[in-house]
Image 1 (cartoon, rainbow, N blue to C red):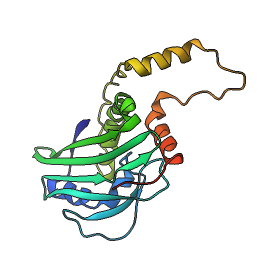
Image 2: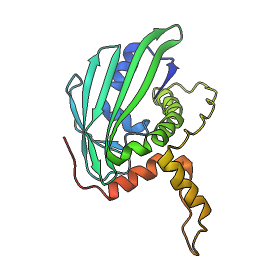
Image 3: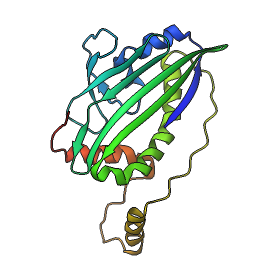
Image 4: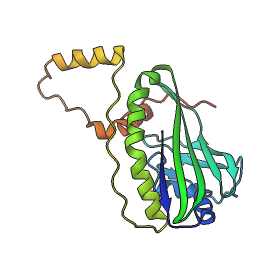
Amino acid sequence: MSTSVIVTRTVEEVFDYLADARNLASWNSGVAAVAADAVAPGERAVYRYHYPGRHREHRLVCSVFQPCRRITYRGRRMWSPLGTQTPEFAFRMLPHSRGAFVQLQVTCQLGGGMLLLGPFLGWAWRRDLPEDARRLREALGDHGIMPPPPMPPPPPPSATTGALLASQARAPAPAGAVPAPPARGLRRAMARVAGQGRIGTGS
């Protein structure tokens, strides 16, 4: 999943900002917090961070570092009863007549039962990335007006999840049942479920 934004800052300024992973928590919805320890930017630089919904601290490693061109952060594989997920946040920069063109890309490798949730998690990221891009512009001091992007349609459910949703739709809700979380919070809700039921971490 990817999106792009034009920021009225030089490529050098944008790269320097993104090269300090501690700044991610101020605008990136996939990073809840980054430890305040000073880390020298560069390839293989390691940061300590929290993924949304996770209480355990994880490692965030800079896997690509090309000054004023590209930078990528790869999270550690996270385990839960639902399966595994490994997030990666990549940024590419190019000079632009109005400042800098920035491409934001998120990939998440899924394993086990998490594969069934892939289409829905992908839809959630496609919905959130444009908002992350807007927040990045504001974090860099650029408050220009950017029209909101069209809302992408939700992915079609797989045969397994479709049958499950159909059976749930036919069954009447029991008295006193708590309503399900709205679709807008699907990815964060799944992160909380995974965090509450974690069985450890992997490498």
